[in-house]
Length: 471
Image (tube, rainbow, N blue to C red; front, side, top):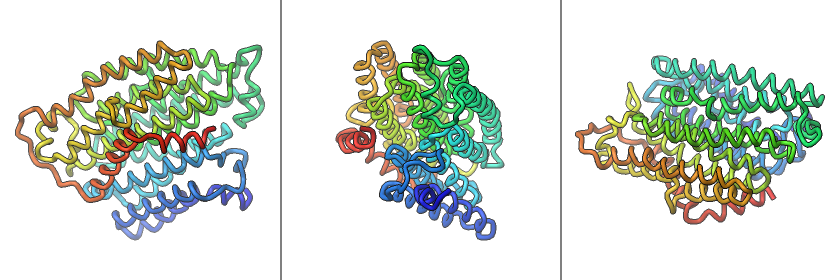
């Protein structure tokens, strides 16, 4: 690898080398808050470098792109990691986490997510996917005294191992059909007589199964509620936003490159989008645990995002990236509120424990209500414009059925998004006061609220930025 290629990977190298240094030095210097803040600083600097440093090469080692699209994703996932580290300052102290280990693992995860969104080779795609997935196995079960967390980590490990087998076998079949691991060359060699080569089609089928596991598409979603419930709340926020976003942003160029030869794949995605939206919506209706409801909510939102994967092209990419941004602010903010309510032995998740908290903790309860209303798509919050963009693009490209089902799923979702708000503010029950929120938590929650309100009232700057990146 040349010096110019190393320079192009400077944001990722900063996070991975910084994480390694923190891991080593943290074994001797046990300072949770200092390591968390240092890790946050490194992630912010990585995002700044990705946004300002002009890469000297277009591709690194034939595996990773340095395009504007890849750099935008690097900025997004680095900021999520920085926000997670800031959010974890009180949470890590409360549960006595090892600050160096926890910080370094999150930086490694951010590096893997960044590289996956930039992958131009199936080898790079596989390595980067496993890089952050292996880290998540550890982070989910990081609280060693929590049996629920250990169970969640084991479930994610088992399902993740199965998905790894599927994606490895799928890549092997595509390589057998085309003789190359470079994504653009492999995809250009797959079409045959207005279809796909049989081995290539089988490989894509296996890839779809693996992707279904990673982003919780129905019927590969069964691990999601249990893992979200057992994982530490800050890690649940990362899984619901950056981890799934990295897979989607890596998958979009793959599907777009197939062009008209992807008819069979799009038929499968059409069916997956419908069942994912409907099953996720109706499963969330019966939940009485906030984290499990957010898990099924994320399943439903992945169904919405499958619509823009079907559309493809610059229009689909713009709708997907905008939706990912606004969805990430709302979902991460909701997990942030759960994090701020955490006590030493438990997290406040069940609706029975939420009764009356709106009067004792009005600021955090109001923030949670704002995040849930944005996820429901209530105007003028950002979630409304995100859903409007997806459904409008679906209508323009002839997917009337998906748009109608998506709108119906959004209407039904009002019930399970309003239910926690009603419990917080409208059900009379004597509640006990929780710990006061820390300054870091209020800063982060305030930033998420401001972003949702700003992008709901004035989405133009973000849309213009995405247009410059994609067109």
